[in-house]
Image 1 (cartoon, rainbow, N blue to C red):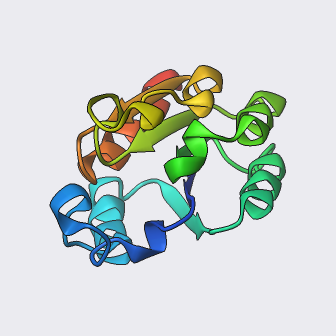
Image 2 (cartoon, rainbow, N blue to C red):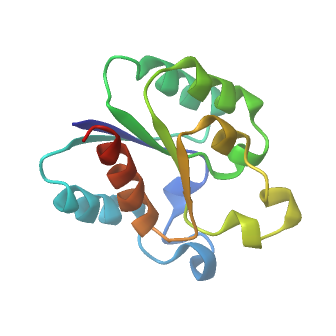
Image 3 (tube, rainbow, N blue to C red):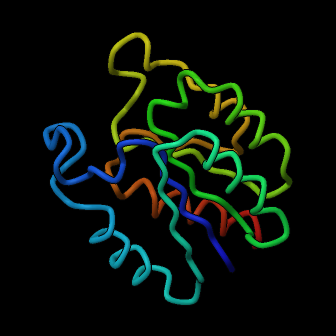
Length: 141
């Protein structure tokens, strides 16, 4: 199984950015853990602070990946374009948010991407990425 891990803006700052909300572990450090949890899966990781790059990566996933684990960050609340990109492909996308967006500021409580994704995992910290991979794997059982 081949999984694309896709992180949006500011997620390159994990470990430094608001550790009381997002924790103190970097995503690169967590990626080692995640890959060890799924040793038989091939995982590619892309992070971008640019919405258009994220759209391009989603569109190019068709035919190359069995699933996408996508943390769009704050774009989930603002980007219909990213939601439309998810709708354009047949690859299942599971949205992930490290914090529970439904318990945060009111402007964070709606996700356009969640409406297009096959599932969402919120508020489980970095463990949410592993949960999302499992959701994708379950679709292929």
